[in-house]
Length: 468
RNA sequence: GCUCCCUUCGUCUAGAGGCCUAGGACGGAGCCCUCUCAAGGCUUAAACACCGGUUCGAAUCCGGUAGGGAGCGCCA
Image (cartoon, rainbow, N blue to C red; front, side, top):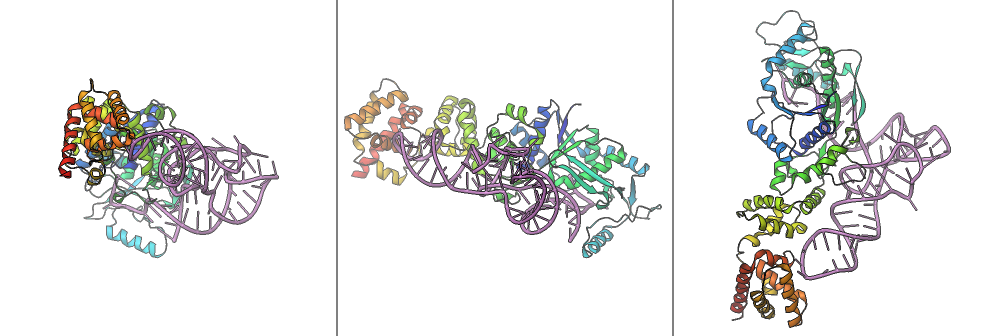
C-alpha cells in the first residue's frame, strides 16, 4: 500500500508555525515511506477564505520547500461531489433533513447548558417524514446512538468515545454547501489518504468522521494527532508572540533549513541529535516517535540553529540572502564575491541575516557619522600616530590581503611599541565608524585598499580638525 | 457544565521496571582564548506535579488528586 498523507489548511490566514510543522510531518512521513503528499485547500467557508491567504500558504510552503506530489485541490471545486455523497447518505438512511431554525437550536443549547449538560442536537427531526413548508432544510448525519468509537491514534494510542456523546452533525447547510467534517471524509476517501496527520485540536472531530466513513462503507485512514505549539510563555500562540507567519521568519532573517530543523525537533526527537539535514529528517522521522504533550517555542534555540546554518552554509549562496536583506534596508549589491566574503566574515557574529545586514552596512556604503563615544576614545591625538603609520604602510603595501595587512599591523605595533589593540581599535573605528566589526585584517581586506585609505584620510582629518 | 487530551531542568527533550547519585541541547553562571563583537573550548547550577498501589526494585505499570489544554457552530 502506498502511503498518502495530506496537509489541509483552510485559507483564512497565513501559514503559521503550527501549520508549518503539521505540513512538515505530513511531508516527512510521505517521503520516508516513498509515498505521496497531497495539498488540499479547505475553503468551504467562503466568508472567511481569501485568495490572498491561499497565496500566503503556497508561498510559505514554497519557502520551506515542502513540495506536494498532488494538488493543490480546492474544496470549493468539489461541491458536486459532496452533494452526490450527501444524497447517497440520505438514500441509504444515514442522513436526514432537519428543519430546525437557528433560534430553536440556540434555545436547545441554552437549556442544556442550564441543566449542566453537554450541548448537543437531540435528533428531533430524525423521525420527520414530511418537509416543513417554506423552510430550506440542512442535512444531518445520523450518528449511531449505541456503542463506542475508538481512534487507534498513532501518537496517543487508543482513544475511546461513547457514541452517545456524539450528536447528529450537519453535513450540508440550508444553502446546500457542505461542512467541514463531511468534506474531510469525502476528500480523504476520494484522495485515498492513508494517514491523517493533524493537530490534536481535531481529536474530538475524529469519532464523527470515523462514523461517517463507516456509514459509507469505507475503511478509514490511520490517524496521528500532533500536540499543539505554544508561544514562548507557554500560552496559546497568537500575534502577540511575534512571528506567527512563516514568511515573517524570512523577514526576520531566518533560513528555511533552520526553521525546519527547529520545527522537526519540536515534538519529535531522535535520541540526543539536534541537527538534522533534510535527508536525515526523511530517513529518521517516524510518527511513533512524536510526543504527546504541547511544546512552547524557544526563540533562542531557533536563533542558535539559524546561526549554525549560517556558519555551515555555502557563503556564496548565502550571499544572495544577505543581498535580499541589504536591499530591505536600502542597499543594492550585486557583487557576489564581496557578499560571500562578508557572509564569511560575519557568520560567527550574526544570528540572523537581518542582523548581519545591519552590521554590514559599512562594507557597502559610506557611513555618515562616527559613533561619538567610539570616536572620542579611539580617534584622537594619542592614536593619530598609529593611524598615520598604518596609512603609510598600507599605501606602500605590495598587495592587498588579510595576511599582508596583518603583517603591516604587526610591523606597526613593533615600531610604535604598543599593543595590537591600540592600533586595531582606532583602525576599526576609522573604517567602520564604530567599535564592532570582524577581525580588522579581514575587514580591511574586504573593504579594499581604496576605501580603506579614503576612510583613514577621513579619520585623520577628523582628528586634526577636532584638535584645532 | 460535559467529553477528550496532556504533565521529566526556565525551554526543547532522552528515558519503554534495575544501565538513572535522571543524559543531551538552548538559555544562565564561571573560567580559558582574544584587536572589538562574536565564535570556540572547559566547568557548573537546574527537573521525574502530588498521593496511594503493584513489585525485591518505578521517572517508567495501575488508581486517584491537582494543574494545564482542546472540543461541545448551518467555523475549519
